[in-house]
Image 1 (tube, rainbow, N blue to C red):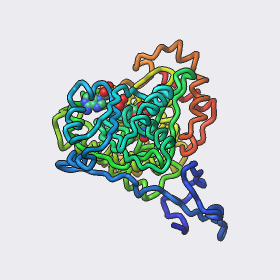
Image 2: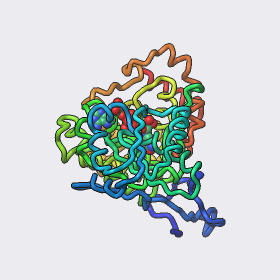
Image 3: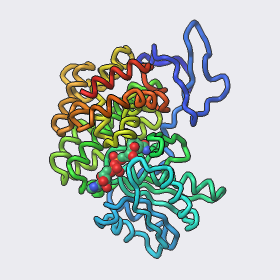
Image 4: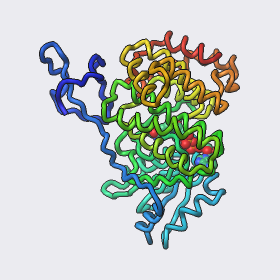
Amino acid sequence: MCGPRSHTQAGRQPRRSRSHRVYPPGHFDKIRKGHVIQCRVIKASPRTEIVFGPSLLERLYAYRGQKVGIVTDAFMAKSGVLDRVQNYLTDCDVLVFDEAIPEPPVDTVSKIARLLADFCPDAVIALGGGSPIDSAKAILAIVRETMPGRRIPSIAIPTTSGTGSEVTSFAVISDPAKGRKFPLISEDLVSDVALLDPEFVRTAPPKVTADTGMGVITHVVEAVVSTEASHFTDAFAEKSLALAFENLPKAYDDGNNLAARDAMHQASCLAGLAFSAAGLGVNHVLAHALDARLHLVHGRINAVLMPYVIDWNAKIPEAAEGYARIAQRVGLDTPSTRAGIRAIEAFNTHFAIPSTLRGLGVDMEEFGRIRSEIVATALADACTASNPRKPSQPELESLLTRVGG
Ligand SMILES: NC(=O)c1ccc[n+]([C@@H]2O[C@H](COP(=O)([O-])OP(=O)(O)OC[C@H]3O[C@@H](n4cnc5c(N)ncnc54)[C@H](O)[C@@H]3O)[C@@H](O)[C@H]2O)c1
């Protein structure tokens, strides 16, 4: 859609396009009356069929008699969750990979992709938190390349309410040999079907609920101030944040509160739609770099970083305006950055999430040794481009020093 930018978007810097966005020639830099008029393209209409409500696993009957690959983790295999899914795969030939781990290493992804390609699946199911879903997405991208012209639908069944990976065009994988973690970004990674059943999340312990739930809030907060944000992505983000602010404490305090679980599951998916289109920023960039070296829990390190990153970004007026807007949207007493930071800190305290890396148990000597390297990795991360404040090496080093504690 072309035209002058709206009031709240006015004053933003020109957006940097990410590689998967295609803008027709001449769409940018049209100068009229001294203003830059930009045409924007967002992928807010998801390719994924998002299924929620009762009896949704019956959708799996569609694969009756077919060859189905399942990517999951050891917990899902042992706890009976996998059996629950397999019960709906009537007369199917099923091959299960249950070794998914966070930020799947490239070697494991390639190995499973080879085995799955030999199996020649008709469909692939990803069952679990962000780790199995990201693994399946990366694996399937390779399998599809080896089978050009063959359509292999992908079905994601999230069991955490956190990453939104079931609808995003991201998959985070790692290269342990280089101590690096990197997001793959491609429309080809987007799942065809997402089955959002809160029953699958009921067993998540409070710590997993809190860590993943704070991941939802980080996704939203970054999407809202992203240089690629728009009213469309704000619509997903703001609804997600309202749901998460109201329901995350309820789901944490009582894991059997299915209404709160359901709201968090949808909040996570909405946040995925928001950040998949708007992008992320320095919070995730630092989290990726820190996890890769220090093996931290994704949602938890994002939660620790969030108050510091908000404070640092808020020096940019457009970012401060975004933070104030969402503070108002969730009903904080004062619609300001400061009130937003206090609310995040209060959540972290309620969920027993520490406020520093030291509190997380990070070895501070090792941290001191690798801090510059972490910052260099962060600056090279694809998500840096959409952060509202452009970071320099010294700025990120000083921010990390404060997070260290
Ligand atoms: N693709 C994306 O858009 C995206 C976005 C954010 C994060 N990520 C990636 O997602 C991964 C993290 O995913 P996550 O936070 O969902 O955690 P996870 O998938 O690693 O799961 C965390 C732990 O919780 C357990 N668990 C999951 N569901 C459970 C349930 N219902 N009951 C009991 N235990 C359960 C798992 O077995 C595991 O031990 C990271 O690799 C991160 O980089 C991807």
